[in-house]
Image (cartoon, rainbow, N blue to C red; front, side, top):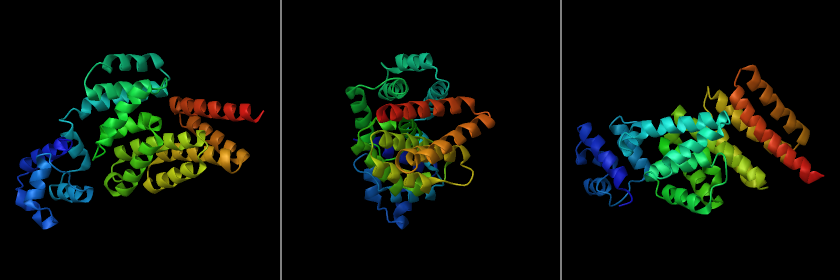
Amino acid sequence: MVYFKYGKAFHDLRIQHGFSLSAFEELGIAKSTLSNFENGKSMLSFDRLDFALQKMNVSPLDYSLMINNGEQDSYTSIFDEIEKAYYQRNIKQLQEIYQENSNGTKEQKLLAYSAKGLYQHLPADEIGEIEDYLKGIQFWGLFELSLLANIGDKLSDTQISYILDDLLFNKIYYENDLYYRVLIYRFLYKVILHYIDSGNQNKAKEVLDISQSYFMPGDVMSRVIINYAESFYIHFYIDEKKGKNQLLDTLRFLKKIGAEDFRKTLKMQYDKRIFRKNHFNK
């Protein structure tokens, strides 16, 4: 039953909040439809699920936690370790996280691949495991978005396109949560660079446009990374000098505000791409 964990989580929340099956009929959700969903026989459409969660005053984050049986906190802490190690260029720690989780549960293996993909290429079988898992996702929780934020650019273009379409179509359900937005920005940033690196200007521009639609007031650092990606786009496709100046301005800004680990990571990405472009142009 592919949908079982989604339905079970909803069932547990419904009972916890004291709602009957018939309480959702006013939303156009029949008792039989909801029963089938809770028993893993079918999936509710995203808009109906969101309306039902709103009726119970349950946030997408709370639902995400329930889906993962409360394990989200431990997974999130490991993802935080992965992010910190990546920005500090601590390859040894990323390797240790991979080794500690690579023989565990399905989720632990995905955590392991998330760490490994930040310091070396993932083999086809590991990418296949990630894609198989993501194909069954109906609700993008913190675990899934953290995967995308770290290694979403390693997926096939077909899978990336599907995820982008889904995130854009259901934007209203994610855009009001800062934690979700930050993870989505990180995914979009990597995908933009992926398309720039592969020479796909149209797709890079398309993802840039999607990223702009997610911005909310106060998303300072997220704007920084998307603007940085946009500067790469300008450098490679519109105005080389202007793009380079914008890239360097961003690096100077990060140094000024003391975001040194973050700056070093972006500087590394800058050096790699500028060197590669100069090398090919010789």
